Image (cartoon, rainbow, N blue to C red):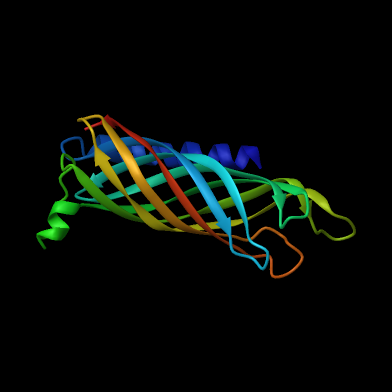
Length: 200
């Protein structure tokens, strides 16, 4: 599993870097580090805490691509005293627009130097559950792998030409690791953090 995640990230990072290099006059490359809290929406809801790291290459107007690795942890799933670590690695498109242009109802001509920007994204990849109890044929296992899908967006506030605050990121995070029922987990993931622009 670790090898698959590493290969996935290397491929995604290579794609983002090449895209930014090929569009040097318009492309940007950013790294974000976020704190996350997520609420699992099952019959007995519980909260995770953790964080993620994102690498985004924006290569045409507001359109870009994002590679993300995130981790969430709870020590008491469903109030049963059983913990869970959830690691996700995902990749997908992101569209960013300046809030000023939205309010003014202007065409979507992205300007990276606007103070406040909004973005929407769709990320897909793999989810790996660890240090818990997962049903399996014959016996329970302490780890399991499934699909991960994140739909959502966020808002950034620029502090300088290189540094921004991620005021809010909100995603619907759907994973499909075994749970003894429908093998589907729906989570509301909220986050905030810092964004560093590596390349203008």
